[in-house]
Image (cartoon, rainbow, N blue to C red; front, top):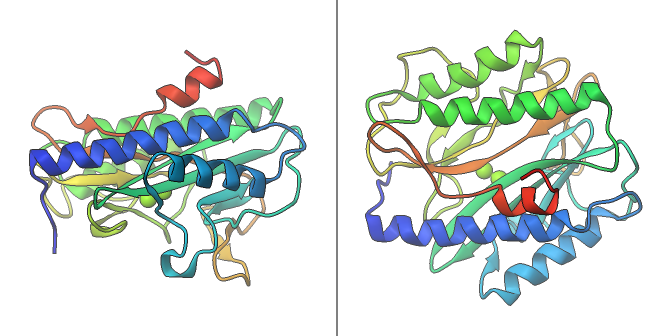
Length: 258
Ligand code: MG
Ligand code: MG
């Protein structure tokens, strides 16, 4: 069942999504060689609690932490650990919060210190995939248009598009219908209607699209062990132009990209 949101509900979703953006910015301040992903997790956990919200991922289906931290060839759902980040690593940080009954869910992939030109390009293209997906998340288009936008842009660079994990509806539940695959055919799939709120999250691999799951039951990594990137925004389907509820602005202020 698909839940279309009222404007009041969208305002609450915006608050949750913005808190995720601010939490990720707080995390961004701590990303450097030597920091562990468990330390990042604590920063996020405390920041979310201090702002009167609940970490959305903690205990979700038994997930043990507040962040998913996925380093290098890890795609998504990495569990924070005590291994220090190294110069040249990339780490996808995915964060969820629950506040006023509604979830926010957003992810950003960070370079640790200096990263290679090759990896920089992977991050740039993945972020562009997200932007292209948002451009077509408008009333009258279909779910397949979103997938097509991501897939065509990523594959034009020779990158692999993960099939096993998808974006999703967002609301009172972290994962609502419909699923939002990062691959698809233009003009196919469910029609997009006003008030549908989607978490759109391209997961793009430098090499093969194929992934494997670790024995921890969570961590997804690329089959060829090449790096992967992941960016996620929460978006309201509108007429003409989608409305983005989450933001990378706070993060990019910290990274001095704006
Ligand atoms: Mg997420
Ligand atoms: Mg998500």
